[in-house]
Amino acid sequence: MKRALITGVTGQDGSYLCELLLDKGYEVHGVVRRASTETFERIGHLAGKIHLHQADLLDQLSIIDVVKEAQPDEVYNLAAMSFVPTSWKQPALTAEYTAIGVTKVLEAVKLLGRDKIKFYQASSSEMFGKVQAVPQTESTPFYPRSPYGVAKLYGHWITVNYRESYGMYCCSGILFNHESERRGREFVTRKVTDGVARIKLGLAKALKLGNLDAKRDWGFAGDYVRAMYLMLQQPTPDDYVVATGQTHTVKRLVELAFAAAGLDWQKYVEIDPSLVRPAEVDLLIGDPAKAKAKLGWVPEVTFEQLVERMVRADLARLQGQPLPDFKARGI
Ligand code: G4F
Image 1 (cartoon, rainbow, N blue to C red):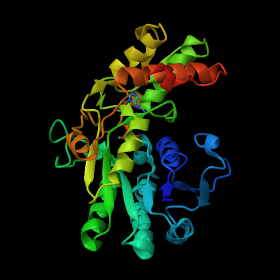
Image 2 (cartoon, rainbow, N blue to C red):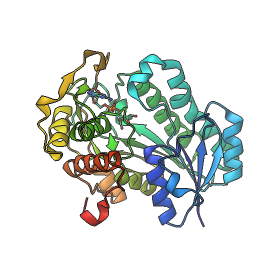
Image 3 (cartoon, rainbow, N blue to C red):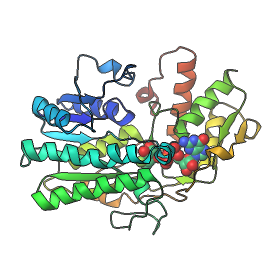
Image 4 (cartoon, rainbow, N blue to C red):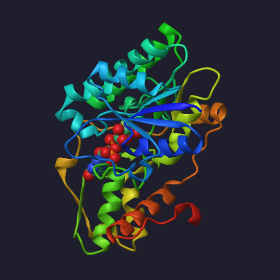
């Protein structure tokens, strides 16, 4: 039986990756940070099926101990300070987790299994920032626009460096935005779908947003964790862009989400200048041709289906109903 270790297991991607690896027969281990309030809601349904270990990316020895305990064949480093606006407020802490944390996991892997443990690094389209080419590929020059993007760029290059310096099996997945009903409410997709559901149910009157003209290439997180897994099943390690190849404005997201609940967005959306970022990433659109050709990866959920399922899930959740069975409905 193969064993996988996931940092950031309590996050959106961690929860979907756990489900995928359990389906494939893996023994799954996850790293959790100790906190006075536990945030296990995304993996609550997996209790008893996965093994949790306490450690922190700021603490090298704790990471070494976890790798020793879990004895993984594959390590997926998904942990990070992942909310871009916070990275301007806490730039040094962002760098500790999102940049240097990667080195700490790589060091643990190098120490305990440099020839046998495969490593996946969650890199980000935020590294393209002020885009130097459209669409963005694996060879597009990077130009990050936030402390988060800068920290992710370090994580990307240190992963490449350990592959080239030590011959380790290290892959970097340059993932464009990927969303789901498990997304945190601070991110724009979930903020919008949760806001729409609240307005529909009479729990809120308006939704405050920042830049409606920003463009993102949004996919479904469940599709994207499949790409992570596939990267570690190849004969040689490499880096891959994972994206849908289509971009939409925040405004389009808003239109679709309100329409999914039968509402006209113009009656409810207010622009709040404090939500506009100091520097924006205006046009992200990824070219997933390499992932399609080499991994056989294709995204299955469209943007329209994604927005609809998130609105339906938020409506159900706020009414205390079970989440809709998306597989049965084909979305
Ligand atoms: O949903 P967002 O906060 O995601 P962002 O900054 O693109 O980053 C996400 O995707 C990256 C790529 O995968 C990850 F690396 C990163 O960790 C994170 O998961 O913002 C999307 C866009 C931005 O242009 C923002 O300015 O939405 C715009 N926006 C407009 N109004 C807003 C809002 N974003 C947020 N969070 N809240 C708003 O009210």
